[in-house]
Length: 441
Image 1 (cartoon, rainbow, N blue to C red):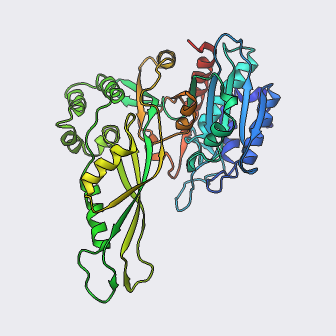
Image 2: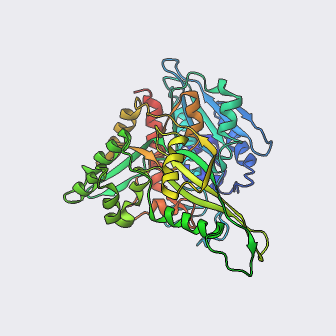
């Protein structure tokens, strides 16, 4: 069956299947065919479209639906690139877009072609029902999010900021998925994210011949540094957003779990409570600390020469309100002053979120699920929201999904057998459509 734009707002599942079949693995990306497909779909629906690209094979699409002029424009944005499936064992072919057992399977089903489909389908529903939003709706579909956004959102923000003039709020990834909590469901809406703070560590020591014992050389000192990173934590910080998030989530749980979760907000015992929670505390750990992981190591070049230098790339993530100098001081105290640290990249994010649109989004979730408990969320990772924030735009991670209680959402992101329930896709489309109709609340 050949579907037109008039059909896709009724059939978000079929639209997602079509998008998954474009292999946009990044690198290299090659998002062009998927972008052109959506550009044709949206332009035929009457939206004004423009393609902007640094690399012709990696274009970005901006589509604008004119509103009534009673409110500032609203930005919807998502990315079309996906991560690799290499060395993963899938039950299905990851780019076949198979619908099985009530799920759409494939790379990007959750991150984030499924979200793109919700946005596109909600916009088409607006057009088909001849509804007019209070302000223009600016849909921006970008390349390259999974590799930092240099070809996508960052490029648009730096080179074409005029397309986002007067925009204050945006809906994007990543949030508003349900988490079971007894008889209720928590829907965390992302309102802030941690900041990228990538560093390089250099460890030096004497060089030597590989045949002779070497004690306390650069490589052995590397082992000491990795051990300190593994066994230690940076200091506890309770920022206001995380306090609100944890308190909201804790109120859903019965005693004694409520008391345990709230005790995370007492810095003197936070780390002890995290150890007590074990794996169940992992989701909170990164929200209560600045974090660092060693990800890339480079040392010797030949097997018989003991290297005098070891270089380690460190993926650091800062809480809102902190700066690279805070990271360098905290990390230096943990791993010792003998390790040389230098900053590679810092992507800043706002210190405090603008919560102006949160009540509207929360109300929509409660309307659609009487068991919903919306909560503001700090995302431990990063999204393209950090780029748009440079233009003063507040992103809400709002890709609503009412999920089965046993659905392993976090375990399927970037993993084998990524999939989304068909009902969740319909739920998200309707929730975003309601947000467009009622914006700005």
